[in-house]
Image (cartoon, rainbow, N blue to C red; front, side, top):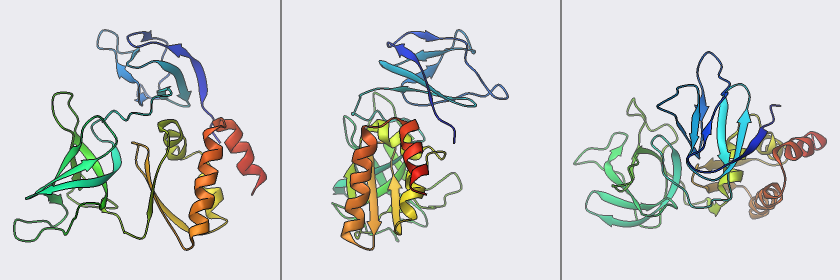
Length: 231
């Protein structure tokens, strides 16, 4: 398993040099932006600890719990309002995002999906500008939904920290795979910290929630070691 490395504390605006990149390509996560003046460096946009995962991924680990929308993010949200063909969706940021009923696979002016207030949506951020409300879509670049769209009502929605979200979305982290060996479940994780879970029994959902609570207090390395012991 590939563990992450702490590279020190940075404040907003500080320049981060000596970036390691594989094939001259660097993946940047929350809290960072590219430095236009020097392509081989990054700039911190929020306070926190710079974290690196080989071969070329960087992000800022912070205690921030307010989600900041970013174009291309996959998020889970709750429909809070429906007005004509426009839905207002709570994705946990400063303002509601909007989603057109025409932004679903196969949707037309005559045939639109049945979406109601209170429904859970798994969507992608099409636009995320400071001056505008975030815009969501439920299709990819090929106009296919994939797993995007309305989530089944049988599931449960929980909120976790953005730090844990990043940990769970790391393909190298074995926590979700380890839990799947104990009982079957479905899960959809939004980068905004909202998580949809569906399991055969309520106690299985509770077990997952307790596992996430425990993981909040542990480092990624500790989580990996604990999962190895439960193989």
